[in-house]
Amino acid sequence: MHLDEAQVARLVDGELGAEAIAVQAHLAECADCRARVEAAGREVDWLDRRLQTLDHDPPAVTAAVLARRAAAPRAGWRWRWAAGVALAVGLAGVAWAAPGSPLPGLVRRLTEWASRGSSLATAPVATPDPGRRGDDAGISVRPGAELVIEFGSSPAGGTINVELTDEAEVVVRGPAGAATFTSEEERVVVEREGPPAAFEVRVPHAAPRVEIRAGATRLFLKAGDRITAATPPVAGRYSLTLP
Amino acid sequence: MVAASSFEAAFAALFDAHFRRLFRYLDRLSGEPDLAADLAQEAFVRLYRRGAMPDVPQAWLVTVALNLFRNARASRSRRRSLLGVVRGELTQADPAPAPDAALLASEERSAVRAALDRLPERDRRLLLLRAEGYSYRELAAALRLNEASVGVLLARARRAFRAHCEGWIDAS
Image (tube, rainbow over all chains, first blue to last red; front, side, top):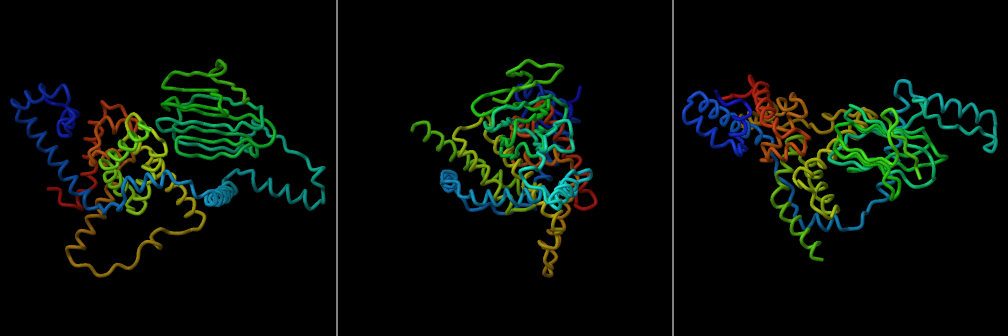
């Protein structure tokens, strides 16, 4: 019985652990496996040399410098604001150009309404319709080791329907105009606007840890396969009420 | 105060042990040393702001850096598609005539880069992280893999990389 591919790789990479004695004993008797291990080692060396051709010098920075940078007040709310505007413009452009986008029609209706001279006071107020996917807005992110989805605490009311999926990304979606969505490291922030609305959150089964919070209240937690929710599931979906 | 100074000592030790290899990994992955420098530093800045060490700090740093890399790439892609900018037009000047050795080195770099780019993303990351000495446990945590399958995946990625290089680089 020869060493398998994984054993050869673990040996070359110094990751054998408890099986090291048995593997070494086999190698002492098996010329074929010794040759495979030597070839695998040469391959790793060859690969390292190739990769070194890509290298550049690292930046001259120290831990102290980065610690000071981290501890400094975050300078850039203006930059963040400007970046947010730029991102919004960019996304609007993409949304405009996307096939099936409702934006061109929306703007056309707005223009027609304006040209009729209607006053703001009598303008019809669009009611967000969560069933209409074309009017949805949202964000999708690939979850890392953990992801927290935070719903801003104001205004009160609204629902979140949570569904577990086999997709790769967490999707947070709501009626257009009901919220703004921003993504940070390990965090998605949903700032609610306008009247209470129904949001949809799609959580991959494979996501290690996903938490949904509203202010200080935890509404939902998926940790591995274990789920803790404010309400029990109905037909596989969790319907959460936003406080 | 004790906890804070303990964290700072751990942060400094982690920086000394891992900053260079995180930078090198990102440099090899992106092919852009300036971007790699920014991402590696930002990952450590975020770790410091976190104020506590994660369970597997090296894997945490890699995950954060990869998220930042993905965001940077996505925003650049958006900008490029909106503005119609071709990366090569901005970054490639006419090269000065190179001596033979430099030319060969440049061709080898291009071939290595091309071979890496042909690998599936997971294999590319696996290969590059392992080349930086990350353990199987750290690889599994950073790339969300089963640790027991890391060896086989690595062996296949190495084989694929070598196959992509054949014809370009002397594989002896």
